[in-house]
Image 1 (cartoon, one colour):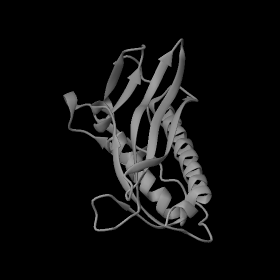
Image 2: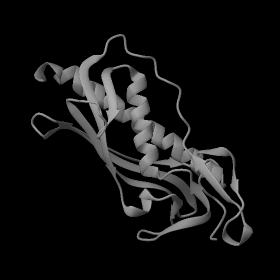
Image 3: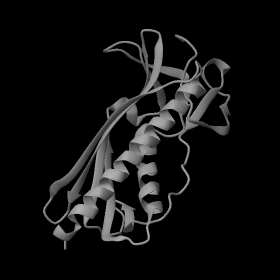
Length: 204
């Protein structure tokens, strides 16, 4: 292994499964579930379906990533996510929008639920970055809102930010990724609310 600085969002209790890779336990991590936001006093009269969150294949799997050069990405053999970053983002998105109380309903696409809009996106980066002796946590993602009647993209939002890592352990890096993801989803939710509050009268 290169060095033991790496990702930890919130370690699952007892997440050291022994049985792997030469007897050395693998540690598993996940993102923290944020407290429910204060619910809106009134909901927008729309239902949203959470669609596909695309990503490079490596982010659809569970290893924790680090970037040590412009074109080089590595993985940690003994530190993994409990779920893939793509799945964690999708779950967090669903929970946040449901808990906000701003919409009539928020459901996964493909369920029996109906909706006027599909919110989909792509995760570009979710990794530790080592550059010039500094360690940061990079999260880059983009979201689009599709009107199902017109099949057109009516809103999109891009987020990319590096969060300083306060320490040199995997838990420190994961905590930084957690903070960065939380900020990105908070920003996305705020911009989505702005879209509906400004343009809702255009949508029957």
